[in-house]
Amino acid sequence: MAEFIVNPERIDPYKNFRFRVKWDARYVAGISRIAGLRSGTEVISSPAKFSPIVLERGMTHDSSFQMWVNQATTGFAQGGESSPNVLRQDVRIESFNEAGQLVEAWDVFRCWPSEYQPLADLDGNADAVIIGHLKLENEGWARDASV
Image (cartoon, rainbow, N blue to C red):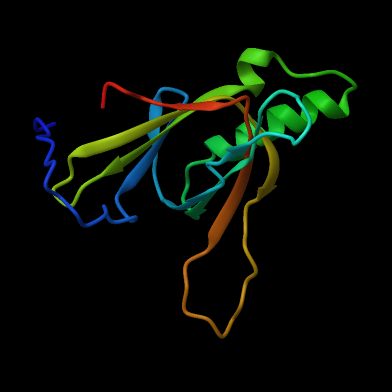
């Protein structure tokens, strides 16, 4: 990847459509929307809480999300928890500028699927792609300062 030169004079914000998600040591194709990268604290003194991350992507032949959800739900259905190394995975969210250069990266730690919708509402009158939805609980996130 080309060396990114920081432009301290830039005043316009980066576009929100150049991003990718890395999970299980590979990039996931077709992610069209990411929501929920936020945190907060309770008014009373308690540990920080992190909102779930929501990934939306067009339907493809990639079944990795479905397999992850199956491992999680099978473990819970049998009265136990799947192996923590299988159930909880780190996820990386990367943003790019218009030239395709990496400008920001966030690492989300120990994510697990809490909700999965492989198909959004289907509509015979619509002209759209099939969108799936994956909600990931997590144990925190941090910006990669090296980017």
